[in-house]
Image (cartoon, rainbow, N blue to C red; front, side, top):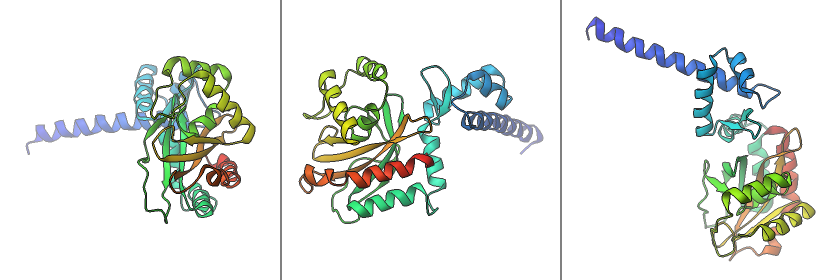
Length: 259
C-alpha cells in the first residue's frame, strides 16, 4: 500500500472516530440525571455544535436510543433502557431476576416493554420452560398501545388528552376480530384497567394469545413501560390468567426503580 493510500484511509478512520465520539457524548448528555433535557443543555453538556447535536439526536431517535418528548426535550429511549437492563441482568436484584421470578410463579412467558411515542418496544422476553408453544413476539419488536396488555396498562395512566391525541393520530387499527377499534370501547376498558390495576389483551393483538399487563412507573409517577404474562387461550382460561395479577403487580412495582 502506498503512503498516500494509507494516509487517506487513516483520515477516514479519524473522521469516523470523531463522529462516533460526538455521538457518544450526545448520548451521555441525554442520559444524564435530571432529564429529559433541552437541546441547548444537551449541546452544552456534550460540547458539540448545535447543528451537529440536532443531527445526531435525529439519528438516535430513529434508532430508538433517544426519545423526544412532546415539549421537544430529549430523554432516554427504549433501546438504551434495554441495554441498561441487559448489563444488570446478572445482579440478584436485577430486572432479569424479577422477570425470572414472575415466570417461575406463573409458569408462563413473561415480557418487559418500554413506552416510546405511540408504541411499546419489547426489551426482554422469557419463554415459558414448560409450554410447547412459542409466541411470535421478539426483543426489539414494536407493538401498538391499544392492542396489547402492556400498552393498555400504560394508556390507562396517561393524561386523557394524550390518549385522545393517540386515537386521533393512529385511528385504532384492527389487528384481530377482537381489537378495540372505537374510542368509546377503549376508554371503557381503560377505566376498568385503572380500577383493577392491570390490563387484559384477550386475542386483541394476536389470535389465540391472551395476556395480562401492568404498567411500570418512572420517578415522576408516569408510566415508562410495562410487564406482562402471556398465555395461549386453548391452555389457560381468562380466569386462570387473571389469578396471576398479584404476582404481576408485585413485579411491576419491583421493576420501577430499575428502569
